[in-house]
Image (cartoon, rainbow, N blue to C red):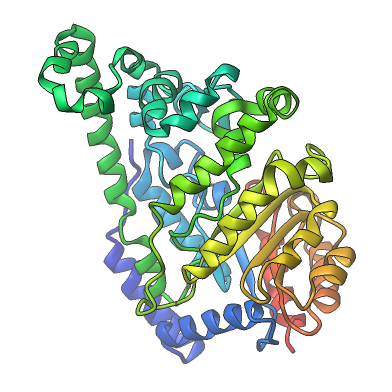
Length: 441
């Protein structure tokens, strides 16, 4: 049940008036200031002060008085909670919550096996989870490499979504396309009528959910806040895509030893597959070149792969994906989850000032020594400090962070190891206030 939602135009009208009264500037002027601050940092220049980005996730939900299930079942209320959070804390750029894409009703209808989400198969105030599953089996590499589309339709989807299990009985449609009327007989089975019904039900629920979020970035721009990143590019590491979505932790680790050539070939196939569908950035759009997802260190960090394994299985295709994304007119933003001290030098192989790296667990002195002056570094205020520390402790940590690592430009502050979630609002405010107080050049 969606909680009462105030008409958004009323919120925007009042917020714009309050912003101009408070700052003496229009939201459009503030958007330009914030965007320039971020772009200057990316270009390794000194902006007027160190910029800050917030990844909101469950923090906005709780700050807005909602439960975690709102992310999946109350998109209108969730949207207004995010707007309130950004307006109250005033970051330079914002990263929307991780789940503004999956409708809980659609996940229920499809019987999603990989996801666990609040309000569905978890309690309403739990955090959403992803189950580690081998949705591609060890002996199925050739099926995937030969025809990824067919594999996703007849193998991946039936395993990832219980309601789509009948798709595993489909014929290879690309082989039967020229004889489709004969092949269409398979759809006479009752289970395919049920699949059609479920897909229609899930599609209607998802479209309603999508409508609730449509135009959100334009709304935030009208209030003076640029986006953290945009859609576009192909900069995810193929190795991590295989590890996260197809083989799982145990599967990918055994494949390194049992099927190394197949694993490398699958990484190359994903790269080729994505390159063929990539769309370059449009220079005429505002904010060009746009910041886009630059891949995430999941199972390729120091604690999972040796340097030799990283060089063999991950970096060759990831580097090509990053370079292609840069050549298409985008700025990749890579998120380093886990320890990455042994991965830093590889990024010197990318062009200077054309990408960003966000750290959650790294020796920042080493990172600055290696990559300072080559790319913008986004450094971290730890989640535990924001959750259990005091505002004065947060202020002191943030002051040291911006004064030590902000020297010379090319630095941005991030808050939390992935998201703020259980952070105290007073601590988040203390962090942003400290950046604005101590982070000026």
